[in-house]
Length: 447
Image (tube, rainbow, N blue to C red; front, side, top):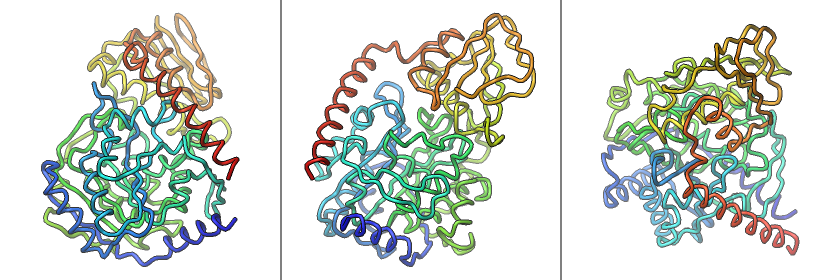
């Protein structure tokens, strides 16, 4: 109980600490260690930020694959310099922790991204899913009234969030606030990950409010954020507040802050500055310069109807609240197709014609002479279905492995599940995850 009280006090102190709402934009065209080291140290010192006690660095490593996914994660060269900064400025210990994309062992992605090399710089690299967990209450949560907190996060004295700036298929932009999805273990990651996704994201700020944010915006991601294509932005962004960071990040990608629902919800709930005008932008590169580089970009998969493919999409609402279900099965479909197309570019455009239905669709569905694939437990069509064959894939949440079998089979697409090398890695790391969770449970029982 003492530890829980200690955590609650640390979280409260973090939320109540005065913030400057300054966002420093630094030019960085390549991740040269010397240049990056200077940017990180100078910017954090300028903001008056010093590490203390146990430091937890949370990057974005939602996915990684050495063959075809290279820009979905925070560059380990940037993280390495942050680790060195923390150690040089008095940190008692430094941990780099992550809970990657649902359904795949996080240590597999951490390895593919090259994160275990950070151990050479004195950091412990952990998968939150294989650590002992503590259930903590969330007094300010709308949907998450509690959550399972991994030991590294529970015990941390200083939080440094290091997002990768990317367009997002259902949340407009992913940066510092959205990064908190990765503090959830897989047991809770998909809770409320439906029409309530933006509200869920803000719930997590209560425990995932970092002391500082260093954003990798050297090569930003466009398209499906877990298998994106790179766009060179050439910047590192540093702030002492995640909401202030996201206000600037949205503008850098060509949006207004009001375009990002979870950002606005965070401010409405009292997080960050009371007004956008309180944010001060400084540094040696201007926001206008960054916006000029992203002007005219359109991130494919943000609107599924704009994806170039003969597959037709019929997107319905949640079956209980009647809201557009942007974060549920539709997001899973986008992710499935985005991954397939990144692995084999152009394959989605060459798919067999057919239709995919998600949610409660009120109207007729026309799959022509192809398959009508109904995805998700609650999906139904309140109208006529025209198709050669109707298939259904159940599940809530829908499983990644299920989709990567059903969608390719229905529309003649190449499945990543058939990569034998990747499949073997998945099996090995799945066994590794089970063993680590077993020993973590033993440690929890003994303690």
